[in-house]
Length: 199
Image 1: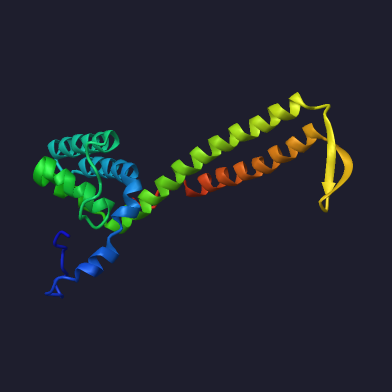
Image 2 (image 1 turned 120 degrees about the vertical axis):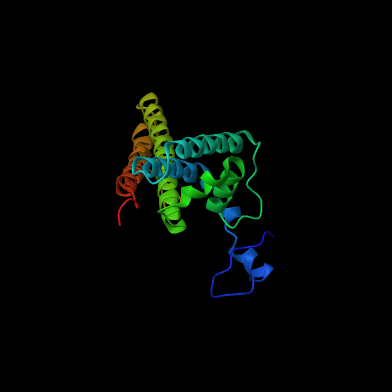
């Protein structure tokens, strides 16, 4: 495992076991796209505020874009010794573009990155699940319309009961999934806020 950064107050390196326990890369590498998206926006802010040069910004933005493409094509694997996704991306960026990559971390903490990455991931997941729910709801509606006149025996306590309309039965499921869809859209609205950008 790679040598980890030690605190100024602690002279000894932590044990390998502790480093392995603290390593979140196997779990948070799914956030690579969100981490790169947030880093590109952060680099743009640094340039606009005059904190980094336009030249450094171009290097950072191009480097991050290339890293994203390499991850998605399989040319770059995120299974090294880095502690987390943020260190993995920043380390790879610095290897590719040099010192400009180190300037990306200016004016933000890894906690900022975690908050942003996770929120972006939740938003993306909400949209994906909501889209699938809409498709599911539409399928139930289509089946209900096709079988609007079909009767089937209802069940109660594992016994046959009065006849029910199959189309209505399908619409009941459409209605249930519609409530789930509304919950995901509500979650999207509540989470569609930036957790960073102010002091």
